[in-house]
Length: 77
Length: 145
Image (cartoon, rainbow over the protein chains, first blue to last red):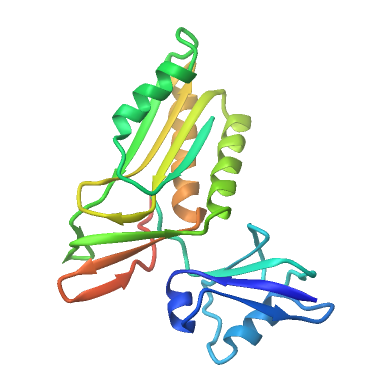
């Protein structure tokens, strides 16, 4: 199965890309995906994650076709 | 109830007047609470020349719609309007408009304040500032309370 990973703002700049397709196995969590995509970068405590446009914890499981996003604290308004 | 992410400069006062005239039933509301956020030319003691606002298309709109619905469940909101800029902004450009119409001021004040704080703390927007000597991402918003 495959998920689409999206990165925003400073995280996108640090990785040098803003989205990628990632093959994953059953039981994979959002935290596992962070490790696979940004493994050499310790997850800052304040990184936020979303699956299919809703906030989730890093322990949340993913399924085929999910859109998984990581981003820094938000600064709108 | 309406939310919109705008890629071009907007006039919050004109949009507010248009929305109220076209969408909010005259005579139904006794209170309108309005918040307009505007770009400053300083931040953390530095001069800011311009700013770029990035967002997460899809999630941003979904989040703003969710908090608009939630506010209408928690308070006696007759209508609400949220507009937010993305893209390149210059000092004095409006960034955000939050307006709430209700019968009485308590609901309008409280719902608009709550909407604004939810937007600031969770809506996926990110500011990047351009200074005289380079660019930087804004790391966090100031406390609202």
